[in-house]
Length: 115
Image 1 (cartoon, one colour):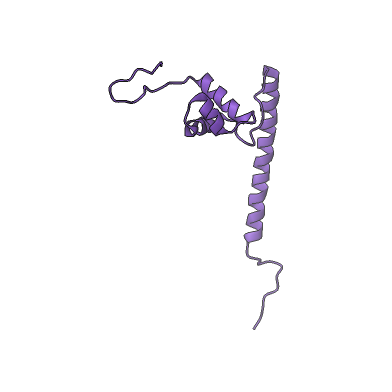
Image 2 (tube, rainbow, N blue to C red):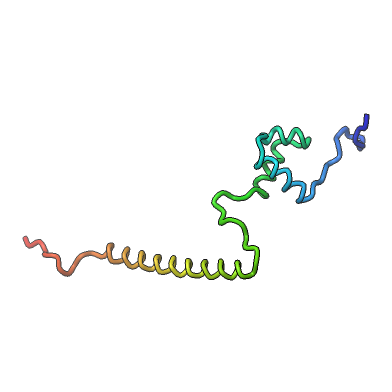
């Protein structure tokens, strides 16, 4: 049998994986009918290791989508994001002003109670 070289401590040497291998392993867990545990057994990895790699390499839920492929796409997306930022800033200022108006004490126009 081919046994890994051991250094007298009885422990197996630490394996190192490059980023490509990690990304491929995460893809196997995301796009397939196998569970993380099944993929981990197939790759001879502990399941917790695949879960850790998924934190780093799996796409985030609600991500904006794929990155722009061309310079024109990037310029268009940048313009869209700038316009959205301007709209959000305007919305924020309107909300701040309305909060200030609504939290004012009504002095003018309201009849005072006379005793």
